[in-house]
Image 1: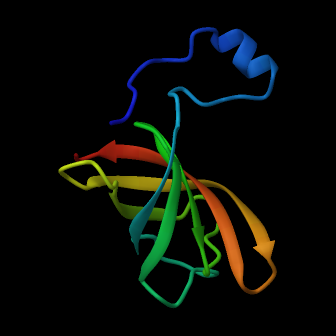
Image 2: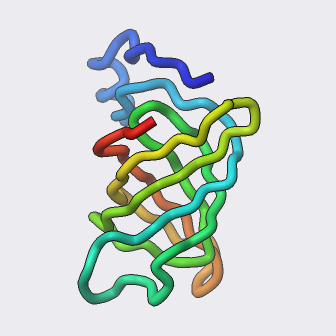
Length: 116
């Protein structure tokens, strides 16, 4: 189950480089991303199957074989092993990182409107 507590000392967290508003759970889950954004530099595939990590009520880190540009708008569905329902939300890519060029990428998602 996700923890809904705010960070205890936001000033210290910001000073130390931590900007998360909610504690992340160290879990790996299957995630399905539907790309809602239109424009250039987006993947040709409109539905991606990825691995969700470090999930909280306000966002998640994902790993995928497709690069997602910052500000890409997504419909996110994450299946957490012990949860009875999937997490369903709209998300926006806040950062990205190349793990293996042309092969494997990581991105930070911020949930912008949680449905479940």
